[in-house]
Length: 349
Image 1: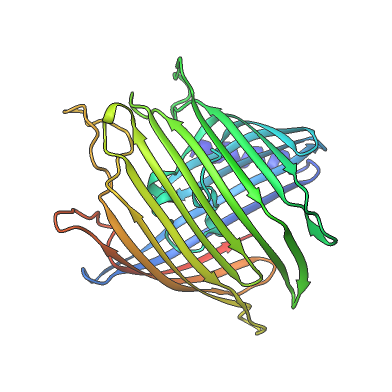
Image 2: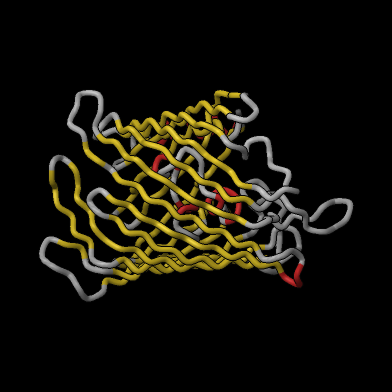
């Protein structure tokens, strides 16, 4: 509650600043597990963020989630400098530059539930410093953005979001990400922005959650057209000294957005996803044995659904998904990782 009050006071104090904006995302959902015949309502996200520009080359962001699995969490809190064109330096608490899907905010996700890469394997926020540089490449055409190589890298505590005060270390974690953005053509057609382009992303990250060094390597690509979005991503996670078997994760999906010109319906997006993950450990040792244990067992999941967009300018999406899981015979699935129907309403302002 104290954090919430402080955030509200800070937002009020900054409200008078120029070029400041307040945004938020609310995600409410209902899930029905088909085999167990049990259901639940849940508020999965209640985010509020404040962003602003103090000068042409200084901006900031503060974001809090009032209901992240029932808890209040400060997510982002950083200041960013842009002393040179196409270059930025960020210091504070942030999502580390790594992978494609794990870097998406909830309102930008395509499915009601995140992929295994975004939720378990590559989901990292931390406190540190990061730099980014966008290098324009040859290939600019009239009315089009040029191809570009975007480089991001950062050093981070490894303390997570809540362990900063008494955390001291002789080593730091790092994360690096490179994106090749091939020519994009943006036109205004039928009330929608027609965006076409190809993105190729390579990333690497080192973390040390509990005395065991963990390296992650990721590679992915997506094609964005006027209606089609097709994406595939692979991530490999290795543990020092063979403390745990290598983890492999794959996320692949296709979405097709079809605009609709009706009063209460603006677009319909059918989509399908296949994601896979081998046995996974978050890198935290068991208190009794001192060994890394399986936190998430090996599984394959198929997700099919449709997203119904209700507004143009302010995002209001109704997501309907069905998830089908495949486990090995000796696996012990978690309560929330079973076949289910998901109905989710997402609003972003």
